[in-house]
Image (cartoon, rainbow, N blue to C red; front, top):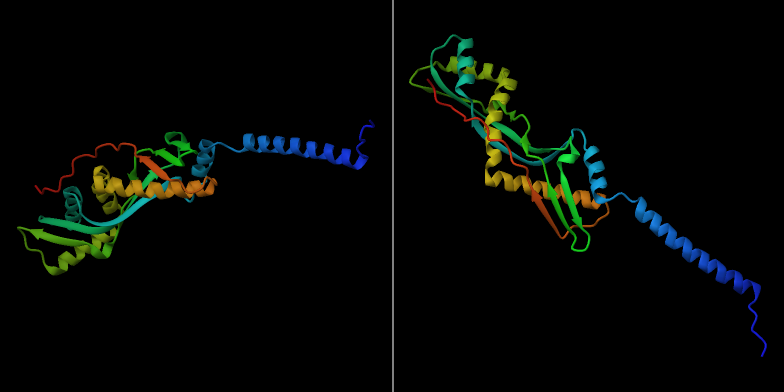
Length: 224
């Protein structure tokens, strides 16, 4: 019985199919090995944060009372001996430092699509004081309306110093459960944005573990 001979075009097509199949496997393997792992992608993502290497996790607006040290310095400017309480509304921004990516830990389970993210300890930016909300209350002393107005004006000019003074109050809230919950939610949104950027898709769940903050010094507003 005569053998069936394959025509030259058929043989070439067969060889070409095998070559294409092998090439496809090689390309897929190369792409799989060349694609950065999730940790590397996340590190690059943190390094490209602008304008500062930090994650804005939550914001709030609070009225805080200045310390007795600040009010004493304010009164000394006018050489006044009195007891006052000064407060102002400030914008508080809670952030997670991102200048050191190694301080973050990320784990991605592709099968369950779950992301676990551990962060450095959260912190606060310098409170942005609304100088038009400064209020001064006198205690056991009478100050003329004109003098109160001058004190408010001077406190407004000391905005930077007042912001630094109120920072202690803002940092004290970092241990509050409600504040930490708000920060965790902000980090979850950040993690979901990263997943989209890294083409991982929307995660089924994001577990956030915040670093522990140091306990701030005790705040005292008691007047001597």
